[in-house]
Length: 197
Image (tube, rainbow, N blue to C red; front, side, top):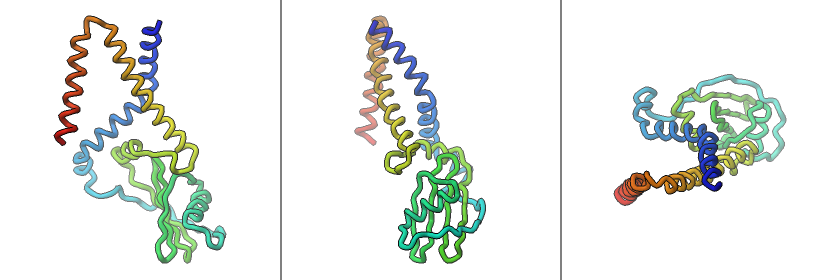
């Protein structure tokens, strides 16, 4: 009975985890082979290209912080979500909207009451790296919290996947020796990297 439950759990976890495994696999490959993308795109950060310029005539409350102003601007543009903001000495706001698929940079110059909206150039490796490095909980947005919670569940499920795999290996007496060699080989290689890199 336990064996059947563990085998089913192993199978369904593998099916459920497949999109996360694929994303982390591809994004790790993209980061590990960055030189391929440097050869294609050149060095440096992903460039932004102007998408549009528009007026911003909403009344900004007196004494509003840069964070409050950024949130107000993003809501007016229907782009509310995870972001960070920097304010220059002249009052200009630089808002980076951390969208997974279409990151944008919004510049607001209070004197001109104008918004310049720029969109990041689409690049497969940059998209994969954004997925890989995406963080939640700290942004205060429900979808980011849901993403972070899902990643936590992914980590727990990966541990369960490993443990159920070990259980299935131990149940199969004919492969215990070859399985033990695989475990020993994996641990030895990992230890080698840990102590030599």
